[in-house]
Length: 156
Image (cartoon, rainbow, N blue to C red; front, side, top):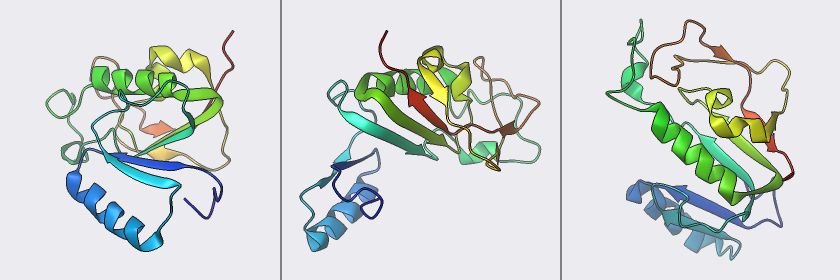
């Protein structure tokens, strides 16, 4: 990330303390004051409008749903309500015109209430195929969802 955003402050948040420990060890070697890693299960302790971009990569998924065929419901592993709660808080933390990237999720961001506050950023040829579940945690028939990048609209 540092190569792409050389002047940015980078914050990594992960619920897994092992992942954070590995990142902190690497950071001690790099001595990069503009980077930090926090063990947390959410962004609720982060300040409002504090991020230019939030990248959520393979966070909202569960390995037990990658079966063939996938289970008809996902509520034993992961809940849409938890996904919606998390992206709602991401919206609070994200600045106007900021970017939200949600890749490899088992839910569509467009099904959330806060999605109306964003514009999808088209990406040619990018279409993730994965089991997808709806607001009621039921398997959707279409496994394709072409949107992973969203730009937050300025506040009205």
